[in-house]
Every structure is written in structure tokens, then in C-alpha cells.
Image 1 (cartoon, rainbow over the protein chains, first blue to last red):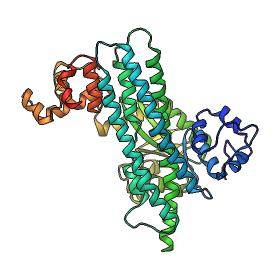
Image 2: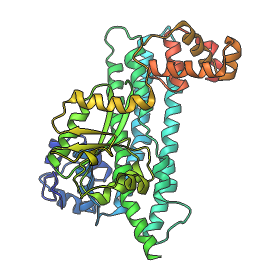
Image 3: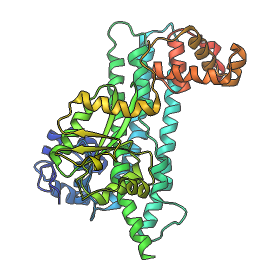
Image 4: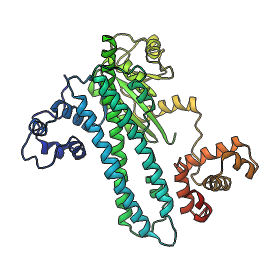
Length: 234
Length: 202
């Protein structure tokens, strides 16, 4: 068993001091702030979350470089699916709409004489649609497939490898918008609002990329191992 | 090598060498590198099959002698480029089977050169040019933003469709913008088109 950074005895508050980006993972698992001196184990128990799964995900995220050296046994797939679904709803229902609103404000504030608003909105909404399709597919096709698989029913027409092959990244178009703003936007003077949008874009781009990494290098291999076991039992 | 991104898998038992190499690779400028560390052979072939990395950097003495052909066959990834990661004197006959070799004493510049050599040979990437668009490219960009197809652009400007596609590829590379919606923003902001000229698509 490999030694990991965080264990069941680590305090929740320490987790965030060590790596602030874990804040979003903690809330996606459904753990609220105000941990007091609770350890990971205690916080998970209080929220009825599988502690092994929680640790596997936060360690995967905080180690920075992806290590393919472990087969994750004894984790709860349902918890991982819940975690991924919560992440989807965070992006679709909260983060992207908030960036959209900020983007409109920033563009409106910078130069009234040139109507950029409509082109920026068009770009953003096209992108938003793409992300929505991408995540809807996972919610409506991939996760139900996996839940069936856990019941021992393998859908012969589908496999997680099919998903992996078509799983595209959703962060590169956000990087494109960042590029447009940084390189080509005719900003004048200091525009705090524009900077604010950029910070949000950068953070969201990174968040989406790591979210995809959890799917590709954490979730997919676990599911594939289950598929192989199921096939062997048939 | 601008705007290139590579997925590199590092298979090596020593965590210090493995992670050290991953850090060194990330210091290479001009190539966006994502690294994956692998410490057991069973997971290696599985990983390659599922995730199809561009490059595998492998300690050839790890897990006995590895049959690269078999590894590529088993994982169904024949285009995989393989580097031998050498920390000690190794038989040339073994190293010969690899596309190239990396010594643990290589500098970041060495690593960059070796990667460029491997990928320039296959891609023939053009040397860096200026980033600003030529007049012709601006004309084409304007047509694209107005919603014309490649064929229509070719007819309007008396070019072959093939030439139009090449121009479009160069535009995307120079601006680092790949979507039509993104190009539209660029064109409006830089006043190449007026908003009412493209209004019907909005």
C-alpha cells in the first residue's frame, strides 16, 4: 500500500490549509464547512460518506501528477458517481452562469460604442451548450450504465472504453476565450471587472481539467476492472 | 514546436527518478506536457490501451526485458514512441529497439531536443513565423466570420478549396483561436467586419 499525503486521521481544516483547491471537492462530496477539529474520518462519518473514497479522491487530486500505480479496491463507486454528478451541477448550474454574467458586465462596462456584447455571448453560449451536452451524456448514459454494471448486469453493447475514446476535454475552449481577452481585447486603463472574469476563467479551466482527470484516470480504470471481473463471471 | 501538447507516460520503479523526470519535462518550454507515472507492469499495458499516450519513457531493465512489439500489439497502440530511460550502462542491443534514449544526466535542453527530433521528423512542423495575419488571411477570416463555407470562399477569392483550408489552419495556429465563434470575436474586436454584416448568424 502506497503512502499518501492525507489519511483518515488528518484534520479537515489541515486538508484545506495544505491545498485550497480541495475546498471544491469537499463540498462536492456534500461536506459543509465548520469542521471544528474533526478528522477526515469523523467528518465522513458525520455526513455518511465513504471515507476510503473521499481519501482516494483528495489524494489523487492533491498529488498533482497523475500516478497510475494503484488499483483502487474498496471504494464506493456510488460515492464517486455522486461526487462527479455534484461537480457537473456545480459547473452547469452555478459556475458557468456566474462567469457569463460577469463577462457581460465586464464587456458592457468597457466600451459602449462597440457592441461586443452579442459576439461574446454567442461564443460563451455555444461553449456552454457543448459542456452541457458533454456532462448530460455522462449523467444519462455513462453513470446509469455503471450502476447497472454494479448490479451485475453488463450491457453488452457498451463499455467504459467506448466512453473513454470519445471523452473530449471541455477546458480548451475556455482557454480560447482567455486568449481572446488577454491577447486581443482592446481594453483601456484598468478594468477590475475584466481581471475578475479572467481569474474566474483560469480557475474554472483548471477545475474542469482536473475534473476530467478524475474521470479519465480514476473513475474509468476502476470501472474497467469491474467490467473485467463481470465478464469473467459470465 | 509551438502549441504542441504531449501525453508522456513514465514507467520506472524509483519514485525519485520518476517524479524528478516528470518535473524536468514540465520545465520544457514550448511544449505542453502532461505526465503519468507508472510503477507496475500490469498497469502499464492497461494504461496504454485506455489512454493512448504519445510517448512512453521506460526503464528497460525494469520487470526483466520488455518486448516492445508485444507491448504495442497488446495495447493496440502501434504509433507509441518509446524512449529508454537509462541510469546505468545498458546493452546497446536492447537500447536499439527504442526510438531514442534518455540518460538520467540529460539536461532539460537535451530532453527538449530529443522530443523535438522525434516529433519534427513525423510532423514536419514549420518554423515560427510572425503572429500577425497576412492580407490574404484577413480576407479569408472575414469570409469565414460572415458564414461562408470553404467552397464559397474559394469561389469568391479565386482559390482552390485546399488553399483555403491551409489558410484557415494557419489563421487558427497564429491566433490560437480554433472555433468560428472565437474568430468572430477577434474579427469584430479588430474591426475586420461590422456587426451588422454578420447579424444574420447572431
